[in-house]
View (cartoon, rainbow, N blue to C red):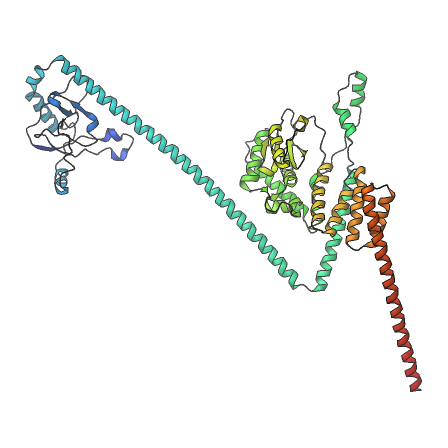
Length: 564
């Protein structure tokens, strides 16, 4: 084997006419162990001055005297005037014959003897070589070594790029697999829901009118019971006044004021939002199982906790894991296709369909976070609803409608500007801990108001009436007259004229606004007209019935006389 020690290596052209290039090319593919035993194998006609033209040899040839170069490993020459590849012009049979010849391994005894003979034959040329030839050979050797090193570096860089590409491909494959699994789960869920709906429709169609009537009455009883339970719940948790909030947030200058402030009673506990929201949902789903819904939320929180390191409850880390579980694993999202469907405001349906509106998705988010020890507060924005962690110094909001996106004040202003069509400026206290507390009662009132607007728009008077009664148990005193007016109008739309007249008459007596007073007065006049018409129709019907009874009794008397 030839060693590059810095001294020039010169050998003459062998006398034989043809031979096969036996240069090992494993160093060129040092990173590929499967090619470690390959040889060049190119046939070389060295009497004609041609060289090993294999691409494996070309980078490692040196130039000698007379324009003839020499491959440092296989000693094939490279004539500058004739550098065409002989391997490309040979027949396949000749290539096979050449490759079938015994292989001369580098470092073998036969090759060492041949190299020694070549050195002895060229000894005169070596003695007559000048010092410039020696330095030229050294330079060429160093150039060849540098070329080999560069090639290895390029191959290593290529392998690194290949590994990175493989990682990217693997990540894309994982993402595709996760998306396919989520799609399959959603399809299965939709299929099960459609199957349940079909079964319910079949059951409905197979029931007799008497059974349907009994079911309706049972549902009405469940709805009334849910409303009564909600009213009792609101009475247990009275609303807090804004004045007390301001007094608590204002620092006292005197010590006496500070002591008096500390002696003030604490705020009563806030209304349990989830319990109240489930009672509201029973207006549309009277057979709702509240325990099952709470278990679903417990399961979601358990999945989030399983993804957190033991003992880790940093707010941002918890938020990140909640977002992963809710939006990536389970696919919760805003229902942009059917935004105004009433089910978007029912928590049980939001958990089933994984779709909702900002406030209902925020309730789900808040409940999961609360089970992990992270309290959230609502942020009542115009045309949108967000939540924020109740953590001091954490001035961020969470958009549960948009995959739990973390939003700063500036970003929220941009979002609201796009929604409302004009520039919006928000109070910085919206994202700070010193903002007036947005209570659970206020959150529920906004949820109910959404439902009221939906039902009034759809002319669903019976459902609107039920929601208005929920609102009357929730709203502050200043909003009650408006709700009383809407309740009377719904009763009028349902044809319950006596109840409508009583409610609307009481509304007028309390001092209705001038615009409302005119409308309500007109409705009351129609109620009186319809009542008079109904009374007249009833009188006519009563008279007709009496006449028919008289005729019937007279006819029977004549029959008795004839018989006698």
